[in-house]
Amino acid sequence: MILSASEITARLHESGCINNQSDDSRSTVPPLTCHCPATPTRETDKSISPASAVDRGFIISPFSPDSLQPASYDLRVAHDQVLPQGICSLVPTLEWVELPMDLAATLRCRSSFGRKGVLIGAGFVDPGFRGQLTLCLVNMGAMDVPLHQNDRVVQMIMHEVKGGDRLYEGRYQDSHGVIHSKEQ
Image (cartoon, rainbow, N blue to C red; front, side, top):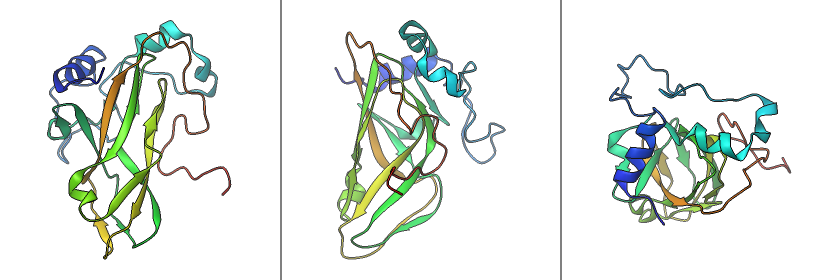
C-alpha cells in the first residue's frame, strides 16, 4: 500500500517530526535537526532490534508542508548545483530521512524536471535507512539544468512493508551530504 498525504502526516506527527514549526530561513531549528525524540546514530546502533526500529518512527527533517503531495513527499536539493548535459550528478537532499521497519520508499523525478530531460537512478530506500539521500540525477536534456537550494526535485513515495524482519545496514547509513560509490 502507498501512504497518502494524510497517512504520511499522521506518521510524522506520531514520531514528533511535525510540530507546526516552520522550516524557513527564520526558523531557529537547524536544517538537520529533527523535532523528534532523540534517535540513535552511533555505529553500534545499526543492529537495533526490529521492535525498536518500529518504535523510532518515521522522520523527514526539516519537514515542509509545501513538499507534501497527495501520495508522496517532494525531497529538496541541499545546495545550488548545475546538472551538466549527459552527466550523472550526485545531489544531496536537504532532508534527513529515517524509515522504520514497516516503510520503504521509491524515488521518482518530479515531472517538471523530467520535462527538462532529468532522470533519476537508484530510486529505492530500504526500511531502516537513516540519513540524507544522495540523488543520482542524469541530465539527458539539451541544456544544463540549474538546481537551487530548496528546489523540489524528487518525489518520495512511501510503501508499507508487511512482515519485514530486516533493516538496512549498508554503507550509506547515517549519510551526510553526497556519498560516492564504493569504487571511488
